[in-house]
Length: 478
Image 1: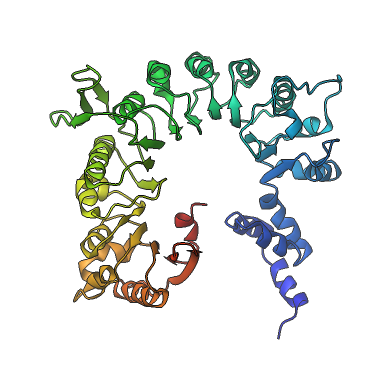
Image 2: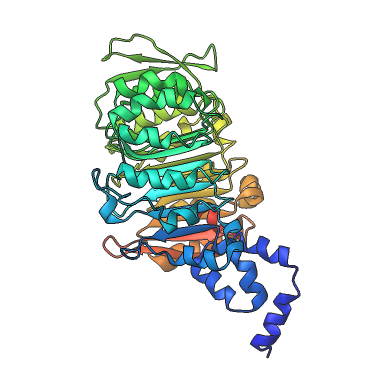
């Protein structure tokens, strides 16, 4: 039996560049640390991945960071760092707390300023908070030395007095705000226009202050965006959401919150004479027919929703979704029910998707939609489908596809493209696992593996995954 010395020798014979490339696809930190203990070669090969993203915590009153101390000892490690997630100290989380009581620049800030390859920086806390201007000034003073920095995430309350400080970072292409104030929202438009390079990504995690009057007037400045995210709490109706994304001709990624509790008595009318123009008729806002330019470049759409539970509400939601994706080049669609409401008539949703969109989808994640046999057969026949996530409440859903006389012929596209299948169910684990394996065999995908990945003891629900080797991350969201 080979011993540890022989194993490490075999690893040492693999080209170093190949090892570092392999570790790029390894996400679990504990596994990476274990690999680092195998041999000196693996120890060095793992470091680029281990130091790709570092977490900085204020460990004591002197603000010593173990990671930064290691960088001072081994400066070459700085070249590996691309992302920093900085957890701010609690004593700096209220405006008015002066950070710079002395003229000295903190050692941690000096160390951050030496990260020449840093591309993304996140400032956050364990709870919603407001950072002091003085602390933010120290942070930005360090980041201006990071010439490759393009993305900044402020997962905190952001107020107007923070903006002049943040604007010192003129080379950004991506900005994320935790909860911006109304005053900040009014400044976003002019700020975007002043960037030295076009802003590609704008994200708002908490949209509590996002209202029609604050964001709709800014949409003309959003034309350069390629990625846009708007989280829960906003006051926008479904018609308002369409208006916000209407002037984004280059947007490729959308992550938006659809709140059915925001009153909006609206009917949407699609004008078929021009596939690039969508019209929406709003009876409650006095605007008879606002024109909406289609988001033709949209490739990935994530919609979080709440308050959608009844059949009529799901129908309205799917109609709204159809308007949004009709002219797009959508390849990935994820729908998440933030309040756990389920759609039991998924056929209406599947049928509502235009054929050009459904046949072009590579990824469909709809864990709140209960599939029946016909739903599953339809989706598995989509030409480019690689990843599917759905809710399973009856094993007959799987039987419908398994019992096809020639499943591999009737569903040829699935056998060619499908690499991951994930389901949520409360059915008996042994029965479902057996059925899934039979389905994959019928589809000619015997080489994949099936396993349970999560469970909920309170509801008896559990999640299962079938995947081809190395494709787990497509459905696990990493």
